[in-house]
Image 1 (cartoon, rainbow, N blue to C red):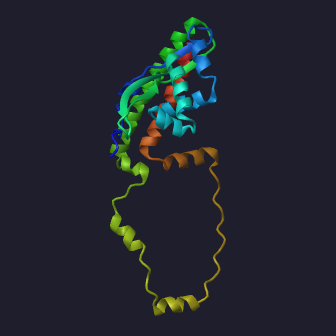
Image 2 (image 1 turned 120 degrees about the vertical axis):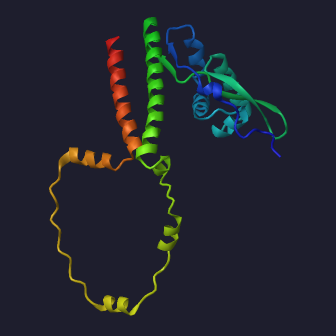
Image 3 (image 1 turned 90 degrees about the horizontal axis):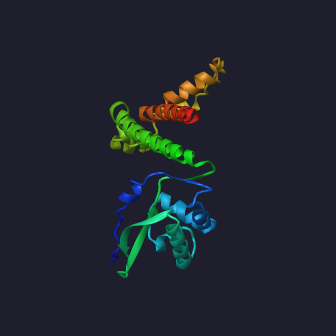
Length: 231
């Protein structure tokens, strides 16, 4: 029986703050050195997807355990990753669970004053998107038939079984098959309303929660761009 927990505690990674590193800062040399390897960059990318111990990471990026541990140590020394929990292997061996130290990590070229501005902007933008996601879920729950509607969940289980039954042929069906069907008239295409009408039709087919999120995200991004350009 495996002693490895089904899901390590990664709350610390979820609460990580954005980190902005200028290419001329003291931290840049060590960080860029740690990220110079393609394997290290893939490991960091996988950790942003889901925290994991070195053994699991080595399988996900298709490298040896020793190579994964080497790059993880360099990334940890550069402050890009951190140990957030401890797990146990099937043999009872203790393993460190790694996660990104920052969410997100941004490397940019600019002066020191820009560092604070970018960090503040990212914090505000990510916080706004988080609030927007919660609000969109509430809109979908109230006006869109619940969150299950986003994934096509249906409670009409009996109807699906009945629809799959094969109908029994009748004499009327056979007679209808022998009767020639008149050719259908060619329908005259309705005039198109243009790109605006197509966009309206596409939006009308989206769930309310998705429409609310897209609209809110657009407003946030425009506001973010306007605020940043004014700094």
